[in-house]
Figure 1 (spheres, helix red, strand yellow):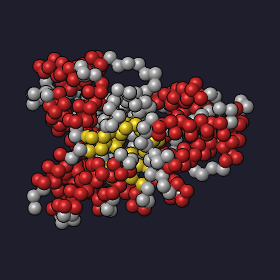
Figure 2 (figure 1 turned 180 degrees about the horizontal axis):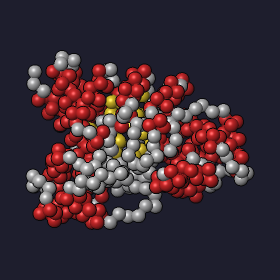
Figure 3 (figure 1 turned 180 degrees about the vertical axis):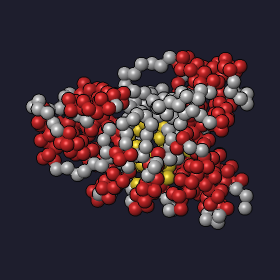
Figure 4 (figure 1 turned 90 degrees about the vertical axis):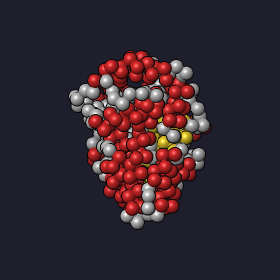
Length: 425
Ligand SMILES: [Zn+2]
């Protein structure tokens, strides 16, 4: 049986991108000098540096030959680049094409990227969704981590560990205080958080993101309210709070957030597994097994938890968690940027072996990188993810595990139907 049909189907399907950072906006961030940024990207692509960067920036660097070939394909699709190589001679041509692509403004740039990537709707994980974006196609996924760390003086060690993100979360909370007033008790604080979550929903949020594996273990214990009230009260009267007590308070706030999100039909996206964005995240913190108590909690049965990036190296733990808990979903964003499609297909195949096709979600995790703008990474990531899915499904058809019809239905589920249903789009 030929697998051409499955390949055509996967290529032509309009997908829902479960996790991207395209057009990301941090409150109070400096406007980017796009010309400078574009020229540094073109320089990277044409010089092909071999240095290993400590921070991955969307892919493992340095890039390999096959990645440059795939980037050329994405450049052709997005900018109409016409050469088959990346070479210093084409520096000006490519730079002008990238700059030209932004002339019509932000909304046109990003909608075109979605068109070229055959993505109908993208869930953008960003503190603020840019107002210019087409709301029918760009859906907001705000962070909730800023609410977990309300005791500023006690945040010192966290700030020292990961200043670049942590300070941004603190700034976000300051902004909320400016808007709603400084809370004087834990009760005040929790009511403020609930108001914010409701406002997120009203502004169109379809899920929220927990990024705290970068700062603390993802194990959120059920904590007695009195302990949390006490930690908050003690802090307000200007005494220090021990780290252990602070973690209890964080756990308590987290449970309140999850419970409110469940009522508001907001699934929780959790970064699980390894990370490259800073050297603080540990595998121990980010192990998805930390979430098991949450997934099994009867009161939060209706809460949907999406394991973002599939949880590598805990792929099997994530598989088992999803198999054992119907409220657990598996997203494979970012992986298409990191590993070749064939290698990603092994992971997808394992998920399908356990009949998890109703809970797998496609995503790109497109973000600015040294080798490309976020719109280029969107096109690139979408192509790599589809190739991986094509390998997986063609091989399962070949091995008589799935019929062609079953494989086509699964392609629809993974690329769009599961997300449409989960987020009620
Ligand atoms: Zn991400």
